[in-house]
Length: 197
Image (cartoon, rainbow, N blue to C red):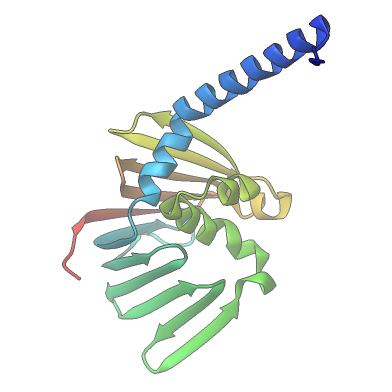
């Protein structure tokens, strides 16, 4: 004896299958997913950077330069060489700041206001959409050749500090990170070519 699906159940099954296929096709062509997949292919990066901070309390911007190192999925190091040596290291949810012989270490879980600044860069480099969207509303402009991510903090407390993070790049290369603070201050970090290991 053969079992047959009722005609209505067969129609529902076909509609569900069509919806699943449409969702899969949409996900496959989602530009943000495509970009983040491309970024996730880069497991290591070592680039020069320059950073300019525009602060209302100062007559002229602060400038610094150095090197950025990234090792997937969550190790990010910023070595400032000028005007004075300083190293910031984010690894496994811990931020360490070293200047001279002094090192200060912070568990990020104890300082949630820092999360948007650090997670924006780490999650973007890792291609981690769920982490990005947990902390930010994400908007993508452009295409894979030249793109810009606009990240707006979801948490009201974070939004009182950071209005928006704007990250620009070309293909899997991150070229700029601009942090627009709620008080009007801002910083712009730009990266150069890949450096040897």
